[in-house]
Image (cartoon, rainbow, N blue to C red; front, side, top):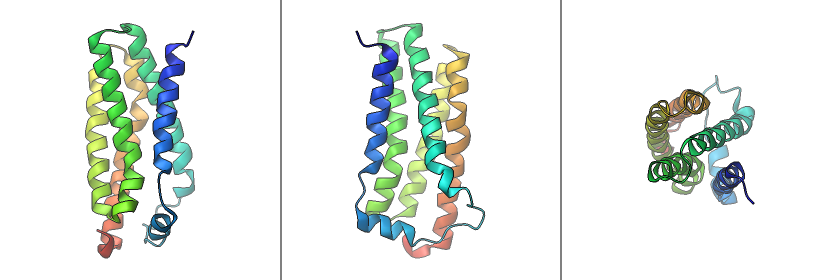
Length: 157
């Protein structure tokens, strides 16, 4: 029988794969963009997001374990999924539309939704909320970075 952590982890992994739905010509556009000088840690960003998504999946599993199968828990699982979908959509949508402003908006939506999710699960599980802290801390960094890139690349806005 499948365990809840297997299902939640599998869904998180499949959604994360959606971030790879990018075309080579879109990637080349993104690579030509100017980046802030302080963005020296860019090669580590995929690892950082992998850790954040793993923490989110563990958080979701803790919430599921609190009241498995209830309407409230299913709604929260939908909320987790929405946050991940918005986050994963950032790169392909930004590249496909060639718009850093769209990326900044998606990032801002992710910041707000991630924060609301963490506050929502806090009464259910302090550990589940704590596991969302990396998202709540890191997603504003990405959103700010994209905003800075708009200034460096006005034609890519």
